[in-house]
Image (cartoon, rainbow, N blue to C red):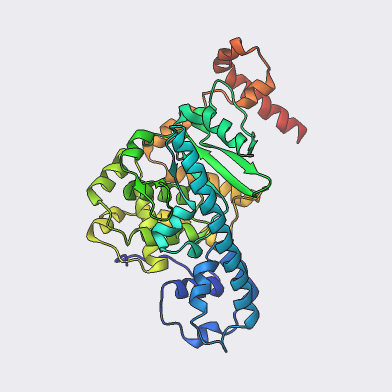
Amino acid sequence: MVDNFSINTTTVTKELSLILALLKNEEVREEAFESINWDLLIELAYHHRLYPILYSKLKKVNNSIIPEHVIQTLSNHYKRNTFQMLHLCGEMETVSELFLKQDIRLLFLKGPVLAHYLYGDLSLRTSCDLDFLIPIDKLGQAEALLIELGYVKDDYIKTVLNDWRWRHHHVTYYHPQKGIKLEIHWRLHPGPGKEQTFDELWKHKNTSSLTTKPVFYLGKEDLFLFLITHGARHGWSRLRWLQDIHQLLQKDLNNRRLTQLLTKYHYQQVAGKAIILAAHLFNTNLTREMKQLINGERPKKLAQDTMFYLQKMVNLHTDPVPEEVSRYHKRYLFSLMSFQQKVLFILSFLYPYPEDAETLPLPKKLHFLYFPLRPFLWVWRKTRKHALS
């Protein structure tokens, strides 16, 4: 636990409080199950993608307390997820073997390898797709291989002056017959921002024992950095991401290397926030080194800001995102940044956007003119939008 600080969770529903109490392995009194809206509890369990592990906990509770339809619904979700994870596991091994034969190194980021590494059981974590990272110069070759396998590219990225290389971080492919989605990453996160190179990540990789053929994933410290930045970027709006942090903190992390990474890439405050949330919501036991990452008031404030997402059961993955949530999330993302990251973020607005090319189409050889023209094109769009409204 974290000393001398507690998160205000009074705005969290009693249904979510019950879920957290069960996940923390606390002794839950029968009174806590009274007046529970079981349909809301199921909805919350699904929203936060915690239903597999919650189902495993509720099975151990006195049957007379839990309505039968609740156990049955969670059981159905659990079984479907288990089949989905096995399906993804088979495809993961196929893709990994094919890519490695063609000399394309790949590191899986989430999915079955993460479930197996963190929980020791595929069925206890959900995943709807396979995410993996490859060197950016292998993207064309990787796409050709996936097309041969029957995958179709979801080509949604608009770009100008190759800004896709740093503004975006992955491209999606879908197999219509298998019903599987793949996300190929060339960066861990959308830019602008400094992050580890592929070679650095490859040097510290882990090999999964889940499959018969080699499947590689991020090393422990790199995985921690990836998971805290990914979860923070989404406001920890799904508690599964925080449950992952809780599980990862039980591993024997190299604190010296982890501290070096957090300092180099300016994620000390984001790490502190994640550790505070894990400690207070999941009773994570913290080492002395981990407690040193939560000094100061900023990580505590950032942790408290997350309650907005839990209170409103925010879903950032379905458009349109409500205006109130969108405004809050923009401010929240900026508050996560270090001073250096904020400077880089503001400077990135000077680089042309695809909207500039749509506003004033120019021949490709003249695209460099979008740099001096960008302020005028931005003002024109804003003025026109205001006039139309």
